[in-house]
Image (cartoon, rainbow, N blue to C red; front, side, top):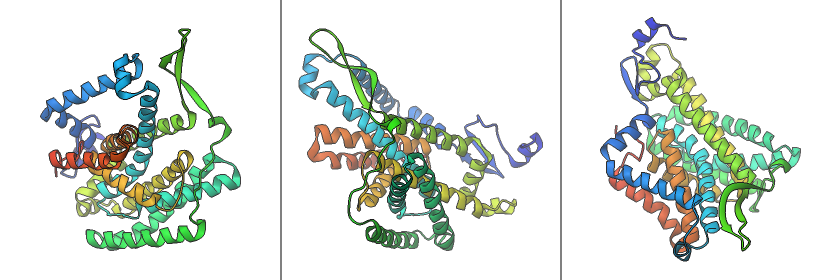
Length: 371
């Protein structure tokens, strides 16, 4: 614990203050400061966002008029696309949150992140298939892929600090080699991790989709496993944000990003901190692979897909921002699902259109900070 004297010496403000200072270096919280600045500078966009949220609340809970049904189809289809988009966004967040720690905070260009996702999924499949313990697959995938992240940080990124082009080329080569090794070992088949019995089946939600002829309400039914994964993603996101912005280890990470030489001069072994952060980000990608293998499937090519999704999410949300990663993942997940339902021909274009619009009007991302 810090004493008041230490707080003054290191220049620390209270945890509730929007900016912390460490050894004379100012560190803004990207989630809090970015959101406040966005609302202050863009009142019209903020109003549009509020109106969209109000519309979604009405569309979810209110009965639809006949004209609305003719335009958008049955309410059940809309709700399925909405919930699928939110849960897909939760999966994208799990992948992209580890990516934003490595790429956005530590400035390490790790284009092998998608391979870590797919490797974690395959490992989780083997563990769940062999032992029958679904939860154990998350632990093993996190540990194994996190250990691979340690090797990447120590053997690759510590030797190429600040050399973005070399990091890009080397990690592309590593991703190709790892993809070929996975193809050799697991083959080109599709794999899906079976959920345990206690998570199988649908859950009835208190949302009415239609009324029967006798006046009885028809409620939405949605898979329990997707709801559990969504809640787990929210808990992980909150824990990461609190750890980065409200704890000493988060303060050290941000201080090391701003000026690692100054932080090392104070006696902090910043390389060890960065190795742990890289391991955690890689382990999160492995956990996301188990999640993806549970309610989607695992196959060659999924590594490239989720690497691209992570890049888009980080660009849209803002580099180094956990709330930005959550917002970007939600937008991309919803765009993919609504696009596949209402505009199947242009579903892929819609995702990249969001990225182009954000880059045109807010290059630092929706919740990112200008540097």
